[in-house]
Length: 496
Ligand code: MN
Image (cartoon, rainbow, N blue to C red):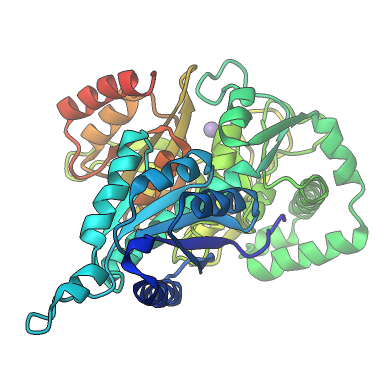
């Protein structure tokens, strides 16, 4: 997979010459300490790197242009240590095409009541400098995140981490290639979209292939690779005694393993980080990719069914954003409702393709008929997602723009479902099923989502803001009337 080089967040500090050399030296020492402190306590795969104290328009523009052209730099933290007249930021901010966050902090946490003098005041002037920087950003109409608080405060560090993870997602989307095997499932609207506008707006590169192109890779799988993978299947998953002894089962999982190796070879050779399949178009494939999609997702590839390239990309970038965090991320679909008034819930699943990263238990490898599609019975991993907080994120192409929608959910214990032959997870959507479903449907939310136990609503909000698209949130605070009004006002704002 295209695991890129170490990613960096550049820490840049604004000041000015007015204060004199001594003060500027002090500013630099402070900035280095803050950058190092943040880097040490930050819990993301990216490094926070101290850059420089900026005091002139030329230096700011030069640094911004360097940030634009350095592939390691995925975003910037700006801090106005002291007063930094913001006319000098205009040229640089105009040129900058990487995301940045305004960290509104100051070096000293507390005012030393007995010692405070004018020197202290001048060296702890973010309250003043940050406002000047905020003004120019507001005047330039730059949609950015502002984090306020002391830099050693854990809430500030956590907010910054969330933003950095969003920057990781944006960067991934800019460099992501999705392979589509077959087209869309016939006549489905929400999984469609304008691939040219996606590339113009996000950099996302979606390429279409005939299933025959993939079949060549499946046929080329070596016997020794196949043997190794089948051994892994036998070691990693539960297989019933009956299945273990069945010739038909043996044949089915062998074909499934061949498909997994073929898809992986295809993706790696072409530098694809995500893929889609469709059960309507399987010419030359004996069965719909089930376990292969599940295992490839677990390895970090994005996936969505039925040609849904937007969700495949979303699964990939949310997996990248979640790297190192507790909990998994999977392709998901709201499948069936439990409208029981005692505890209304949603059973999430798909025909086969749910990522095993959302369970801690050993999955069971099974072969069952699909019911639709008319192909051989596909092999799949069956398991139940862990209880706990999660989010469902979807992205829709409304024709003239993109909309993201995120719903906070709480996965619960799932009763035994002895006859259900697919991976699943049961959740309680916030604020409740009635309002969550009403809001989701009013907003045109898709049935396919990225379901993440690792990410929060804020990760999606930061990502959408960075991408310049709408993000509707459904959580404990959602009220239908307000939500509907937000959809209406947003449609004006985002159609500018
Ligand atoms: Mn589906």
